Image (cartoon, rainbow, N blue to C red; front, side, top):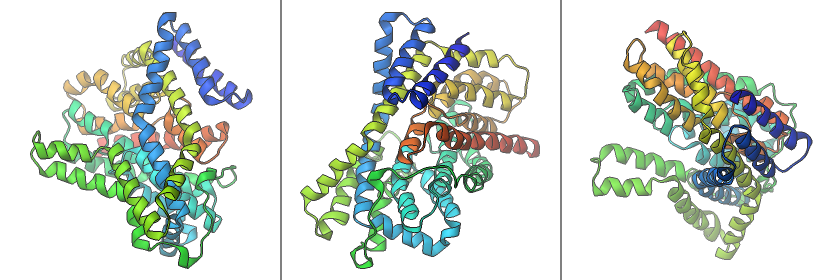
Length: 437
């Protein structure tokens, strides 16, 4: 019965947004309240659950998304994105841009949280699309697929790292196995799948469609690349330093503070204001005007992400995720497949890949502790399951939809299918490794 209620709620949400043309934020509030009551939540707790879900989702992503939009708009307006796009096309050729973006997304995706990597790469993707007339999804989706693979399967991302600890796996071994599994997943879900999407209508978000500037108006290649990717550089450097210094000391505490993605993005905005703004003849008020305009570009996206958080919180508080996972746990199947199924079921309910992985860990830990399954492979099976069937309760779903201006139905056909391909191919890779080891 709970699963049927969740299915009806999701269908209702799709109907309100796709056919009723209700704004997704309002649709989420309506559906979340209805689902909460149908699942037995006391009426007096419904509003609180909705507020908590909105706050939790926006608290985790608001600074990264807003700061990323500000950086992205400045990177576009200054011509830095155009410069980087030119370098990429010169190096790989326009026909190989999907593969170049997949490689770039994977490199960027390993050290960065997904939201940070997304907002960093979007202006570069859009610059390539606009300048060379390339199909948006054919070029953009491979980069996002590569980042998704890294997010779900590879340490130091939060969920894989936490799963290594929960299952008492070995970090280095898990990373090695993860790389083996990740490559075919990103190739199939990225460039190979995306080449079939040229006919799907999509266009870059208006604020990221920059004018083509003359060559002499563009910033230098080094300044463009270093400024656009400064968050990645800072986070990688901080991660290496964290490994090098003793845990628990004052230095480690300072490094952890500096390595926070929110702070990194704010520091990058300050640097970009100088390197792409003031040093190129723009006044500080002009740079701030660009930053302010960027907020308008992403305000609606933030509301949608907040709404998806409300729906997720309702499902978590009513225990639907645990209920479904527990029922799957009684199935007599391969432990690795079971781990994937349990995690995928939770992912469908709560939207967040990280939450799905960590929730599944608590249910699967006794199974791993009992022996008979490689804990390193279980980390990857759970990680793959956490990426399955991303849909309307996942904030990344709405980021993709709005940044690429794709319809809701086409987002399900492209983004959801891409994430599921990553998940299924990831599981297949894990099962092959299990047979070979």
